[in-house]
Image: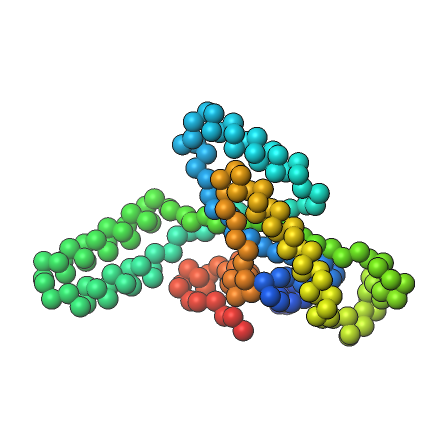
Length: 215
């Protein structure tokens, strides 16, 4: 059986810099976390208004966006650990018994109900023009045919700043468009992006309560 490839070889990410993902093909991505909206609790008129605003938002975009949902079984162990610490410090025997029973109730309820947490994300892309200059066009072709030079591995800072500004213009457009539907969106910073991908590729570690590695 062939050895499994490391995550670094599977991911298309070259680096994460200043809250921006730089992919191996030179394109950029920003990731935003979006708030949820309880659509079913709104009146018929409110639902119609949300749908119309969302439709207007999609029609206003001149670039693609990606929406994805992360659904994960709720991990209550950190909360239970906090309760156990309170139980150990409690001197009143009656309150101590009540805390013990509450801990067991929470653990049993969560297991029986199979409660999951949901996070909503929006990915905004920006792909630089392939042939901005003849010289860059040649370098791009070399990269396509597997002869990418070492100097192109990391995006130069001046180019990165230029592309990031254009990417952030798109991010602002998405934020402003979604706020009209009642949805708030906030870009993830570098640390949050690393934690996100760590959780996606190491779900078992989070279930055990192990914090993600940031280095």
